[in-house]
Length: 342
Image (cartoon, rainbow, N blue to C red; front, top):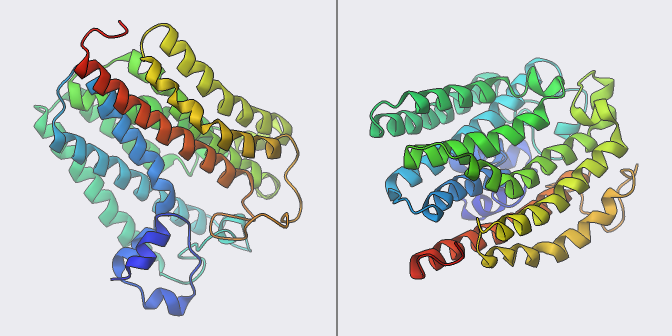
């Protein structure tokens, strides 16, 4: 049990040699293979689904909420594993491609065979599927939850190819982390679909979208050379950079608007505590990505050659944590003072 590696893999994407890999326990290998550090974004979406249900006055089953969270995190992990497998067999993650520079690509770096990698994929996917089937049975074989599960499977299998290369990857992230995870999670926990919840989740979901946008800006030149038409490749780096900035600023305006229409209580203005983090990262997005690593910028394990992606991730994590804390306090206020801010 390598607890130090577990902790490290949950915060960065650690580089490991084959010798180091062979000495690791199975959970450490799984965490590295799934790029577990980014799974926190899905964890927050699942938590927010339950908090929105509580916000609207519903009772939430702790077990159902736990299974929902576990299932969504495992589904994201399954997608990350399949992403690496798909790009490797299609020849994308070869010839020193970007993915092999910022962290271990298990197959390309010789850490696992294709068969072993598919085993990780199958076991993780089956566990995610088991969570989904449990929630379906617990909700009386609800056909809507079947449909949500089907849509989730579609994005797990087809995000990497063909969606990502058709400039649909960024939109897919917006749809998956918002309507599917938070809106669908809300439905699983309450039995009702609520578009108000979907719109209210946008402040957080836009932040998640900036991370994939930033990553695709970082890879723009090499993706263009490989004819992978991500959205930044299609619209150009400058437009993509300012799109990310817009998606960093808009969440604050949305929260203010939702407070003004009394959907949120003023306690949600806690998100403005994340502004100093935004002020640290936004200047970098005003300029093109540097050709060489800036002296103060970290190398590897979540750093260079990634440049915009880790900064978008840091910004989203700060905003997301305060958004979640604000919503927790919002729920408590409504329980302690019924009718407050209505």
